[in-house]
Amino acid sequence: MYETQSDLLKALSHSTRLAILDILRDGEQCVCHMEATLGLRQAYISQQLMTLKQAGLLGSRRDGLNLYYRVIKPDVFNILDALRSVSGVTSKPPRHKHAKTNCACPKCSSKTDRVTLQMSLGEGSQ
Amino acid sequence: MYETQSDLLKALSHSTRLAILDILRDGEQCVCHMEATLGLRQAYISQQLMTLKQAGLLGSRRDGLNLYYRVIKPDVFNILDALRSVSGVTSKPPRHKHAKTNCACPKCSSKTDRVTLQMSLGEGSQ
DNA sequence: ATACTATATTCAGAATATTGAATATAGGTG
DNA sequence: CACCTATATTCAATATTCTGAATATAGTAT
Image (cartoon, rainbow over all chains, first blue to last red; front, side, top):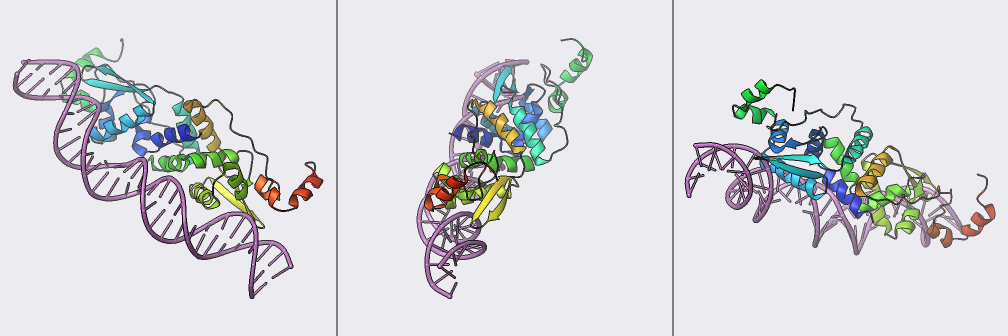
Protein backbone atom coordinates (compact mmCIF):
# COMPACT_ATOMS: atom_id res chain seq x y z
CA MET A 1 0.00 0.00 0.00
CA TYR A 2 2.87 2.37 0.78
CA GLU A 3 5.15 0.57 -1.63
CA THR A 4 4.65 3.02 -4.46
CA GLN A 5 5.47 5.93 -2.23
CA SER A 6 8.53 4.36 -0.67
CA ASP A 7 9.82 3.35 -4.08
CA LEU A 8 9.63 6.93 -5.21
CA LEU A 9 11.37 8.11 -2.06
CA LYS A 10 14.14 5.58 -2.59
CA ALA A 11 14.77 7.04 -6.01
CA LEU A 12 15.11 10.45 -4.38
CA SER A 13 17.22 9.31 -1.42
CA HIS A 14 20.60 9.97 -2.92
CA SER A 15 22.63 13.14 -2.76
CA THR A 16 23.75 13.04 -6.38
CA ARG A 17 20.23 12.47 -7.58
CA LEU A 18 18.97 15.37 -5.50
CA ALA A 19 21.66 17.53 -7.05
CA ILE A 20 20.64 16.44 -10.53
CA LEU A 21 17.03 17.34 -9.89
CA ASP A 22 18.04 20.78 -8.70
CA ILE A 23 20.01 21.26 -11.91
CA LEU A 24 16.85 20.41 -13.82
CA ARG A 25 14.67 22.89 -11.94
CA ASP A 26 14.79 25.47 -14.71
CA GLY A 27 14.39 23.07 -17.58
CA GLU A 28 16.21 20.43 -19.53
CA GLN A 29 19.97 20.02 -19.42
CA CYS A 30 22.34 17.74 -21.25
CA VAL A 31 24.43 15.12 -19.51
CA CYS A 32 27.66 16.98 -20.20
CA HIS A 33 26.28 19.96 -18.35
CA MET A 34 25.67 17.86 -15.26
CA GLU A 35 29.09 16.30 -15.64
CA ALA A 36 30.69 19.73 -15.63
CA THR A 37 28.48 21.14 -12.91
CA LEU A 38 28.80 18.24 -10.52
CA GLY A 39 32.37 17.28 -11.32
CA LEU A 40 31.49 13.62 -11.49
CA ARG A 41 32.24 10.97 -14.06
CA GLN A 42 29.86 10.61 -16.97
CA ALA A 43 29.06 6.94 -16.42
CA TYR A 44 28.18 7.63 -12.82
CA ILE A 45 25.84 10.46 -13.70
CA SER A 46 24.24 8.32 -16.37
CA GLN A 47 23.56 5.64 -13.80
CA GLN A 48 21.80 8.09 -11.51
CA LEU A 49 19.85 9.48 -14.43
CA MET A 50 18.63 5.98 -15.24
CA THR A 51 17.45 5.53 -11.68
CA LEU A 52 15.45 8.73 -11.83
CA LYS A 53 14.10 7.85 -15.26
CA GLN A 54 12.97 4.40 -14.13
CA ALA A 55 11.21 6.05 -11.24
CA GLY A 56 9.17 7.92 -13.79
CA LEU A 57 10.58 11.31 -12.92
CA LEU A 58 12.63 12.13 -15.99
CA GLY A 59 12.15 12.25 -19.72
CA SER A 60 14.84 12.78 -22.33
CA ARG A 61 15.21 14.26 -25.78
CA ARG A 62 18.06 13.74 -28.16
CA ASP A 63 19.54 16.51 -30.24
CA GLY A 64 22.47 15.26 -32.22
CA LEU A 65 24.98 13.79 -29.87
CA ASN A 66 23.50 15.41 -26.83
CA LEU A 67 20.75 13.99 -24.69
CA TYR A 68 18.69 16.47 -22.78
CA TYR A 69 16.97 15.32 -19.62
CA ARG A 70 14.00 17.03 -18.06
CA VAL A 71 11.71 16.47 -15.11
CA ILE A 72 8.34 15.19 -16.31
CA LYS A 73 6.70 15.32 -12.89
CA PRO A 74 7.28 18.90 -11.77
CA ASP A 75 5.38 18.20 -8.55
CA VAL A 76 8.50 16.42 -7.39
CA PHE A 77 9.89 19.87 -6.62
CA ASN A 78 7.16 20.25 -4.05
CA ILE A 79 8.66 17.26 -2.30
CA LEU A 80 12.14 18.71 -2.55
CA ASP A 81 11.05 22.11 -1.28
CA ALA A 82 9.29 20.57 1.70
CA LEU A 83 12.35 18.43 2.29
CA ARG A 84 14.58 21.47 2.39
CA SER A 85 12.37 23.05 4.95
CA VAL A 86 12.35 20.01 7.23
CA SER A 87 16.09 19.53 6.84
CA GLY A 88 16.68 23.11 7.85
CA VAL A 89 18.31 24.00 4.56
CA THR A 90 17.81 27.72 4.19
CA SER A 91 19.69 28.39 0.96
CA LYS A 92 17.77 28.50 -2.27
CA PRO A 93 18.36 25.74 -4.77
CA PRO A 94 20.96 26.77 -7.38
CA ARG A 95 19.55 28.34 -10.50
CA HIS A 96 20.68 27.13 -13.90
CA LYS A 97 20.09 28.64 -17.29
CA HIS A 98 17.88 26.71 -19.62
CA ALA A 99 20.22 24.77 -21.90
CA LYS A 100 20.67 26.08 -25.40
CA THR A 101 20.52 23.82 -28.42
CA ASN A 102 24.27 23.58 -28.25
CA CYS A 103 24.59 22.98 -24.54
CA ALA A 104 25.80 26.06 -22.70
CA CYS A 105 27.71 24.25 -20.02
CA PRO A 106 31.41 25.10 -19.57
CA LYS A 107 32.57 21.77 -20.80
CA CYS A 108 30.56 21.78 -24.00
CA SER A 109 31.29 25.35 -24.89
CA SER A 110 35.01 25.19 -24.22
CA LYS A 111 35.74 21.99 -26.09
CA THR A 112 34.86 23.12 -29.58
CA ASP A 113 34.86 26.40 -31.43
CA ARG A 114 31.10 26.55 -30.98
CA VAL A 115 31.87 29.00 -28.28
CA THR A 116 32.58 31.54 -30.97
CA LEU A 117 29.30 30.78 -32.63
CA GLN A 118 27.49 31.04 -29.31
CA MET A 119 29.02 34.40 -28.55
CA SER A 120 28.27 35.80 -31.97
CA LEU A 121 24.68 34.67 -31.62
CA GLY A 122 24.33 36.34 -28.27
CA GLU A 123 21.56 35.57 -25.83
CA GLY A 124 18.77 37.34 -27.65
CA SER A 125 16.47 35.68 -30.15
CA GLN A 126 15.60 31.99 -30.59
CA MET B 1 25.77 19.29 0.74
CA TYR B 2 22.73 17.13 -0.07
CA GLU B 3 23.70 14.56 2.54
CA THR B 4 21.38 15.91 5.18
CA GLN B 5 18.46 15.83 2.83
CA SER B 6 19.14 12.36 1.49
CA ASP B 7 19.58 11.04 5.03
CA LEU B 8 16.15 12.32 5.92
CA LEU B 9 14.66 10.79 2.80
CA LYS B 10 16.27 7.46 3.62
CA ALA B 11 14.52 7.48 6.96
CA LEU B 12 11.24 8.04 5.13
CA SER B 13 11.83 5.53 2.33
CA HIS B 14 10.17 2.58 3.95
CA SER B 15 6.56 1.52 3.70
CA THR B 16 6.16 0.65 7.38
CA ARG B 17 7.70 3.94 8.45
CA LEU B 18 5.38 5.85 6.13
CA ALA B 19 2.45 3.99 7.65
CA ILE B 20 3.64 4.88 11.14
CA LEU B 21 3.87 8.56 10.26
CA ASP B 22 0.34 8.51 8.92
CA ILE B 23 -0.84 6.98 12.17
CA LEU B 24 0.80 9.88 13.97
CA ARG B 25 -0.85 12.55 11.83
CA ASP B 26 -3.47 13.34 14.42
CA GLY B 27 -1.20 13.23 17.42
CA GLU B 28 0.69 10.87 19.63
CA GLN B 29 -0.02 7.16 19.73
CA CYS B 30 1.37 4.36 21.82
CA VAL B 31 3.35 1.49 20.37
CA CYS B 32 0.60 -1.02 21.09
CA HIS B 33 -1.75 1.04 19.00
CA MET B 34 0.57 0.79 16.03
CA GLU B 35 1.05 -2.88 16.68
CA ALA B 36 -2.71 -3.41 16.53
CA THR B 37 -3.27 -1.07 13.60
CA LEU B 38 -0.48 -2.39 11.42
CA GLY B 39 -0.66 -6.02 12.47
CA LEU B 40 3.10 -6.22 12.84
CA ARG B 41 5.28 -7.55 15.62
CA GLN B 42 6.18 -5.17 18.41
CA ALA B 43 9.93 -5.52 18.05
CA TYR B 44 9.71 -4.73 14.39
CA ILE B 45 7.67 -1.60 14.96
CA SER B 46 10.05 -0.53 17.67
CA GLN B 47 12.93 -0.83 15.24
CA GLN B 48 11.22 1.41 12.73
CA LEU B 49 10.33 3.88 15.45
CA MET B 50 13.99 4.08 16.41
CA THR B 51 14.94 4.84 12.83
CA LEU B 52 12.45 7.69 12.68
CA LYS B 53 13.52 8.94 16.07
CA GLN B 54 17.19 8.96 15.13
CA ALA B 55 16.28 10.94 12.04
CA GLY B 56 14.97 13.59 14.40
CA LEU B 57 11.36 13.17 13.36
CA LEU B 58 9.83 11.65 16.47
CA GLY B 59 9.68 12.38 20.15
CA SER B 60 8.26 10.16 22.85
CA ARG B 61 6.57 10.44 26.19
CA ARG B 62 6.11 7.75 28.75
CA ASP B 63 2.92 7.26 30.70
CA GLY B 64 3.16 4.24 32.90
CA LEU B 65 3.96 1.24 30.79
CA ASN B 66 3.00 2.94 27.59
CA LEU B 67 5.26 5.01 25.41
CA TYR B 68 3.59 7.58 23.24
CA TYR B 69 5.35 8.68 20.10
CA ARG B 70 4.66 11.89 18.28
CA VAL B 71 6.00 13.73 15.27
CA ILE B 72 8.16 16.65 16.37
CA LYS B 73 8.67 18.03 12.89
CA PRO B 74 5.13 18.45 11.60
CA ASP B 75 6.49 19.85 8.33
CA VAL B 76 7.34 16.28 7.44
CA PHE B 77 3.69 15.90 6.52
CA ASN B 78 4.21 18.46 3.79
CA ILE B 79 6.72 16.06 2.30
CA LEU B 80 4.31 13.16 2.62
CA ASP B 81 1.45 15.11 1.10
CA ALA B 82 3.57 16.16 -1.86
CA LEU B 83 4.76 12.57 -2.16
CA ARG B 84 1.20 11.31 -2.36
CA SER B 85 0.46 13.72 -5.11
CA VAL B 86 3.48 12.72 -7.19
CA SER B 87 2.83 9.03 -6.59
CA GLY B 88 -0.72 9.42 -7.81
CA VAL B 89 -2.19 8.34 -4.50
CA THR B 90 -5.62 9.91 -4.42
CA SER B 91 -6.96 8.54 -1.13
CA LYS B 92 -6.65 10.62 1.98
CA PRO B 93 -4.29 9.42 4.69
CA PRO B 94 -6.15 7.41 7.36
CA ARG B 95 -7.39 9.40 10.30
CA HIS B 96 -6.77 8.20 13.83
CA LYS B 97 -8.21 9.39 17.07
CA HIS B 98 -5.84 11.06 19.45
CA ALA B 99 -4.80 8.38 21.90
CA LYS B 100 -6.34 8.51 25.35
CA THR B 101 -4.29 8.17 28.50
CA ASN B 102 -5.19 4.50 28.53
CA CYS B 103 -4.50 3.82 24.89
CA ALA B 104 -7.71 3.41 22.92
CA CYS B 105 -6.37 0.88 20.45
CA PRO B 106 -8.25 -2.45 20.19
CA LYS B 107 -5.42 -4.40 21.69
CA CYS B 108 -5.04 -2.26 24.76
CA SER B 109 -8.70 -1.87 25.47
CA SER B 110 -9.58 -5.54 25.02
CA LYS B 111 -6.83 -7.00 27.18
CA THR B 112 -7.95 -5.60 30.50
CA ASP B 113 -11.22 -4.51 32.00
CA ARG B 114 -10.21 -0.95 31.34
CA VAL B 115 -12.63 -1.17 28.48
CA THR B 116 -15.42 -0.91 31.02
CA LEU B 117 -13.81 2.11 32.58
CA GLN B 118 -13.36 3.68 29.16
CA MET B 119 -16.98 3.11 28.21
CA SER B 120 -18.34 4.43 31.44
CA LEU B 121 -16.19 7.53 31.05
CA GLY B 122 -17.53 8.14 27.58
CA GLU B 123 -15.84 10.37 25.06
CA GLY B 124 -16.82 13.70 26.55
CA SER B 125 -14.68 15.65 28.98
CA GLN B 126 -10.96 15.31 29.72
C1' DA C 1 34.23 2.62 -43.48
C1' DT C 2 36.95 4.94 -39.82
C1' DA C 3 37.31 7.79 -36.18
C1' DC C 4 35.46 10.62 -32.74
C1' DT C 5 32.09 12.28 -29.21
C1' DA C 6 28.26 11.79 -26.00
C1' DT C 7 25.94 8.67 -23.44
C1' DA C 8 24.49 3.89 -21.71
C1' DT C 9 25.17 -0.71 -19.89
C1' DT C 10 27.22 -4.55 -17.53
C1' DC C 11 29.59 -6.55 -13.89
C1' DA C 12 31.52 -7.22 -9.42
C1' DG C 13 32.99 -6.02 -4.83
C1' DA C 14 31.92 -3.10 -0.92
C1' DA C 15 28.77 -0.90 1.88
C1' DT C 16 24.30 -0.52 3.81
C1' DA C 17 19.47 -1.75 4.82
C1' DT C 18 15.96 -5.19 6.06
C1' DT C 19 14.03 -8.34 8.99
C1' DG C 20 13.32 -12.29 12.17
C1' DA C 21 14.68 -14.37 16.47
C1' DA C 22 16.12 -14.06 20.84
C1' DT C 23 16.77 -11.41 24.71
C1' DA C 24 17.05 -7.26 27.61
C1' DT C 25 15.09 -3.36 30.13
C1' DA C 26 11.96 -0.53 32.63
C1' DG C 27 7.74 0.35 34.85
C1' DG C 28 3.74 -1.58 37.43
C1' DT C 29 1.47 -4.60 40.77
C1' DG C 30 1.04 -7.40 44.53
C1' DC D 1 10.95 -9.25 46.31
C1' DA D 2 8.73 -11.92 42.18
C1' DC D 3 6.15 -11.45 38.24
C1' DC D 4 3.75 -9.26 34.47
C1' DT D 5 3.36 -5.96 30.58
C1' DA D 6 5.14 -2.67 27.24
C1' DT D 7 8.89 -1.56 24.79
C1' DA D 8 13.95 -1.68 23.30
C1' DT D 9 18.20 -3.84 21.84
C1' DT D 10 21.32 -7.12 19.87
C1' DC D 11 22.62 -10.37 16.57
C1' DA D 12 22.85 -12.68 12.35
C1' DA D 13 21.27 -13.87 7.77
C1' DT D 14 19.75 -12.00 3.71
C1' DA D 15 18.72 -8.52 0.32
C1' DT D 16 19.53 -4.23 -1.71
C1' DT D 17 22.13 -0.25 -2.99
C1' DC D 18 26.34 2.08 -4.21
C1' DT D 19 30.13 2.77 -6.97
C1' DG D 20 34.16 2.05 -9.94
C1' DA D 21 36.00 -0.14 -13.99
C1' DA D 22 35.47 -1.68 -18.30
C1' DT D 23 32.97 -1.75 -22.31
C1' DA D 24 29.07 -0.97 -25.49
C1' DT D 25 26.11 1.92 -28.38
C1' DA D 26 24.48 5.62 -31.18
C1' DG D 27 25.11 9.76 -33.67
C1' DT D 28 28.37 12.75 -36.40
C1' DA D 29 31.96 13.90 -39.45
C1' DT D 30 35.52 12.81 -42.80
